[in-house]
Length: 312
Image 1: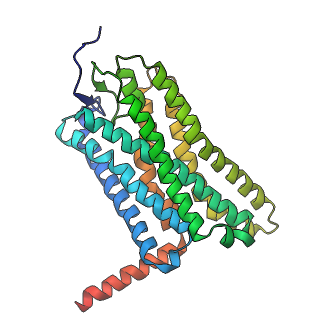
Image 2: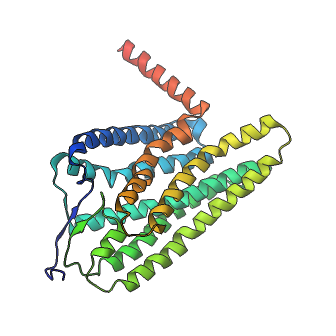
Image 3: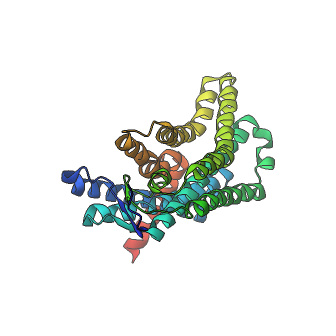
């Protein structure tokens, strides 16, 4: 029987079952968080300040880096506090605020990955018409549409989820306020919210996933038709990093939400770490910092900073 007292806060269990590793986990996640902020902030600054990077591909990369900075900041600070202070409580409003921004940014990332795959499709499969099709106005519309669709999808779901009654227990077996874990804690009838979650997932996340998948099928098909080996390698190198990120992001999310829910909480946490913590850290290195053009730009910026420092 559940306690009928309406709860006002939740307890994020996180990694409480690893008491001897709390300090190690705190230091590891702190380093990851700092690296994520530094890498993504650097990409945003370079894209904004350097005219050579004012291209559709880097415009979308700048959007992705900005998103990843906000995305990881919705989870990491709270998790670091939990590991450091052992205070795992989070208020009702704080939990739903975290859930909203996490869902909003995750949904937006689905659309941005789809937009970036479409950009690579036009660049590789329609190179002669690329500059005409992917003009600055169209790029702006694609980016704005990605952010607005992510916001709309999450707002609808959170509005209905917040109407549920939570009367105990209040322990969330996760390191952030995750939607399925919250639904499981509700003492209201959850059939409609589960159906709504399924419908919204189909309407707002299935189309960008299918667009991404279709784009890369067309890209790979086009690359295989290139006669020269050098040409195939060059074309594939421009989209291989995008394909890696897409596979990790979508793959881990599907595993988490398609696995049976019984006795898989620890496995779900491990896969959740991939798409909530590790992917935002790796994206700057996979997408941008491995590019020769970006590395040379960073080198020149550091050289100018060094010269300025010496002159001062």
